[in-house]
Length: 137
Image (cartoon, rainbow, N blue to C red):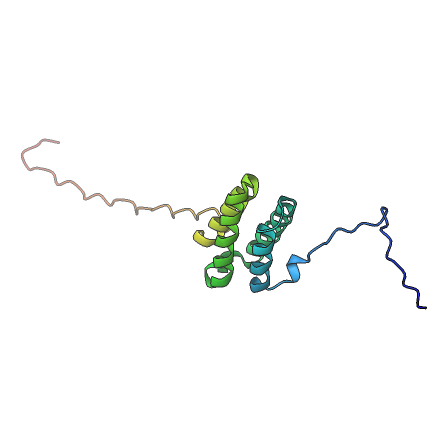
């Protein structure tokens, strides 16, 4: 007879599944987002964590965001999911960060404008007044 060992539940072991969102492609993130949204409400925290990673990604991409069409499309999908799960704080932060880099321009450093040169006028040369002949001296 063969003996089979039965796995035992260890209450001291942390069985939490940690997803490395930063290592996933946008296509993989899109699939994960759908799975998490259609799962239990306990997965909503993972969606919020995904949002934090995407916000960092947007900041890394910076003002080149318009060139990354796939990322922009994913951000819109993520934004819609956040609205459905009512993650207000994450909605605001994602919205503000996305709009800042998508519609904004790089902020140039503050530089004092150069002073206009002071216009210097040459001295006026006055013409000598002619004396009238009829005036006595």
